[in-house]
Length: 81
Image (cartoon, rainbow, N blue to C red; front, side, top):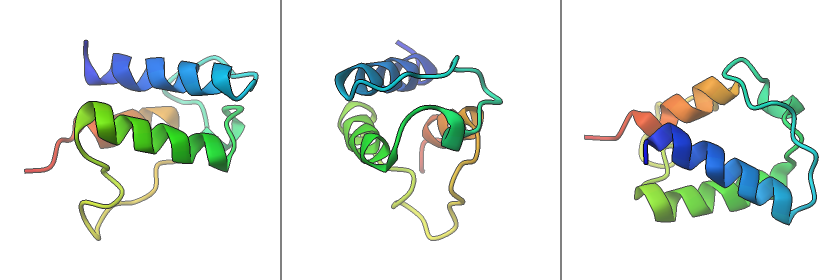
């Protein structure tokens, strides 16, 4: 399964578990408009770290917080060296 598919599947799973109505998951979707709240994102990032093997938001001091879903996916696709 591709990194993109893992991220999308986890977003859908967290949204369902937290009873959130998700907007269509397109690359240009603003994360603030996704339907997920801060608890959902905390759960999501923890699960993705388990599944993918790293948290892109803690591996470097130079990481910018993603604005869109596409930015979020790319953060996980850019595996640290």
